[in-house]
Each structure stands twice: as structure tokens, then as C-alpha cells.
Length: 285
Ligand SMILES: N[C@@H](CCC(=O)N[C@@H](CS)C(=O)NCC(=O)O)C(=O)O
Image (cartoon, rainbow, N blue to C red; front, side, top):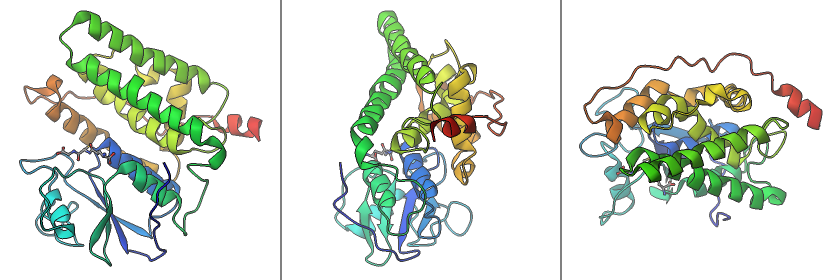
């Protein structure tokens, strides 16, 4: 899909609203960062765990306040765009502060808009010669990883559970093998498929491994996946998009595994240790 819209090069005109624990918001945050748009697109994050009215903002000031339109909950942003809005709002939302309207509330479209921003820096996240492969990678991630994890964590059938877990680890095993000889999924620089994959891998050991009963192996047990995860985490600005405590709290607050309100501790996971994967990029250049 190509975005039909285009963003203008006007600093602070656009605002990315989201929740740091939402994997779809995470895709947009990563694209904003990898394309160097921090000074072009403001970012306003709701409280990390949705409350009674869904995604909520602090009332006045603070880390999770909305200084742009003063929204108290996500619905306020949709109502500011359309006073007759009656649907179910979702994050992320890209807001145009000049025209007071929502540009998009679709994470993929937002990623592509950021990618095509006139002030974007760094490597193209959706290069024309690689789009088919990127779309296939994202589709595989959605079905064989996310979809199978959800099924493994929610089914009451032993056979369906085992099938789902095998599917998750079949996908992880294949990805680990593929990343043995190349730094990123498309080669020497991260693209849209890498950023989508990162959102899942970075949550796996803390959330899905235990919470979705996918505990054959951790990402930390895979030599290539573990290095790949740390590699992307250590790219400039990416660490600020990751809050493992908040991911875990949100996941266990909203999933069947956390029904008694207890949030599991750990695991210890140091994403800052050297990954050594630069040599793979050098080998390909
Ligand atoms: N199609 C949307 C889906 C995003 C989505 O599902 N966001 C979730 C949070 S991760 C949400 O806001 N759901 C609304 C709700 O929970 O009420 C996109 O890809 O941008």
C-alpha cells in the first residue's frame, strides 16, 4: 500500500498520539525515530495502561499530559476531528495541529507517511525493489507470530495450543537462521519489516514467553535473534521507545494470564550489551 496523503515540512505541525505499550504505536514511534523526524513530528503518549475510558492523558502537566489540544482521553482527539464521532478510537493517531484534524489512525499508513516525509533522513524503510518481500515479512509476522501467540495464550484446546506454539517457534527458528548471514531482514539497513519484527521480539521474553505459554525458548536463547534485537535497540533513539516494565504491566493487566492482578517480575534482560553484528553489514557492502 502506498500512502495517498503527504505530510508538509512544517516543524511541530504534526503530532503522533499513542501509547508506549501499544505495538502499533511502537511501529510509528520507530519510523519517526529511524527517519529522524523527532523535531518535525511531536509525540504525545497517553498513560501506558488504558483506564476505564480507554487510553487516558494526565489532567494537567506531567509526562502523559496532552499540551496540544488538552485531551483527557483518546476519544477527545477523535471528537476534535469530528464532533459526531461514535466509533471505537484506537492509537496511534497522527494529528495535524494546523488544520485541527486527524491525518491518519492507521499505523501502517503513518509509517509510510513518515517514510516519505520531505525532511526524512536515513535509509528508506520501504524501498521500491523490496516491497513485495517486506509485505510478505510483515504478513508472516502478523500471522505466524502475533496471531499464533494470541491463539496459544487463549485456547482451551491442547491440540490447538501445541499447533500454535509450534507455529510461533517455527517462525522464530526460521528468522534466527535467516539472520545468521545478514544484519537486517533486507540486508544492510533496517526497513519496515525490521521495525515491525522488533516490536514483537522486544516483548517476547517479558510478556508472551510466560503470559502466552510460549516457553519453549526465549529470544535470549537464539544467538542471532538476540543479537539482532540488541542491534536495533541500540540504534540512536530506539531505546526511548522501549519500556519493558510498562510492556509487562500492560500485557498482564489485559491478558488472561494476569487475571489475578499480579504482574510477574523479570526476566533480567540487558539490551545494552555489544551485539557484534556490524561485521555482517560490512561483509555485505
Ligand atoms: N488499525 C490500527 C489498530 C491499532 C490498535 O489496535 N490499537 C489498539 C492498542 S494496541 C487500540 O488502540 N485499541 C483500542 C482499544 O483498546 O479500545 C493500526 O494498525 O493503527
